[in-house]
Image (cartoon, rainbow over all chains, first blue to last red; front, side):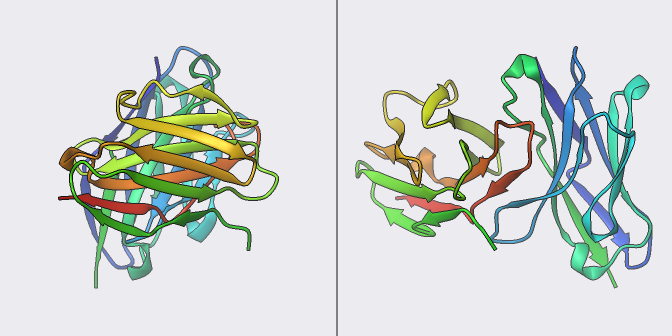
Length: 114
Length: 114
């Protein structure tokens, strides 16, 4: 079975500060991992995707995530937060054993203070 | 830009009424997912289609929900009869060749059952 845990339902940072959103997964086989962002009243949009080509994955809007197999983690970071980064962020995992059906975490709301 | 189109955007109905939600996947995409989003449960998978064939609907209450793809340009999700606990945002997402690829989400249908 596959699952994703996002630590912290809310993360609050100041504009210009480091953003760190945590995601841990459980999987017995190599996973596909994703981060999606959801702005108010919109659907989810892909930020980045891990496919085993490289452990450090760069995405859109300056975000990146590092795959750490030993820690079963795929944390999302951005060096400097913008006000426009305020949104809901979802980590997702997809496995061959799960018919490649993405399972999403509960989401982390990023709040950016001026 | 190609996008997934969902209609209606908002739906308010009374308990017991039939609700039909529609989704137009991106042209050429052969994978369609239906997810339901609530504060309590997060994103829950309802149905998964590949090449218009239903591959997984284990998350869908079978007694009242049904999902179909009458053709490659239309996916429908029906609830009959609707109940207040069905109030949620329903998302359709499409992609190429399964859930290990990038998914494109529609803007969702916000359903309120009174």
